[in-house]
Length: 105
Image 1: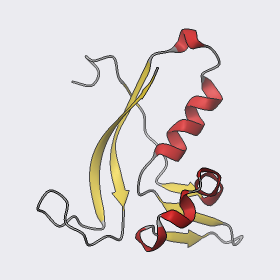
Image 2: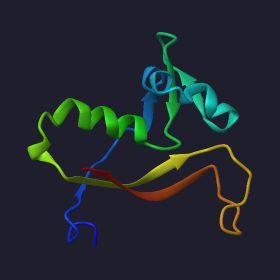
Image 3: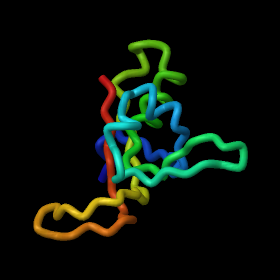
């Protein structure tokens, strides 16, 4: 369905560097809902609660002209959030699968 709409599937990293989240200002905003970890070099990372930071970095690095637009990218991947609030009447687990479509015009 997404392919027919002109979308291109991408697979994005689940372990995401803190630098991207700090640059966007959302490292602190996400608070305790974000699973955070450190690698063996003591660098900060997060398990992706969402992928906007990653996808915008990818597009910024690869799209150099308006001629490459519009661009529709989608993913169907696991997300990780330590949240307990109900969504649409259901409790969502800490790990769940979500489909996202990102549109760049």
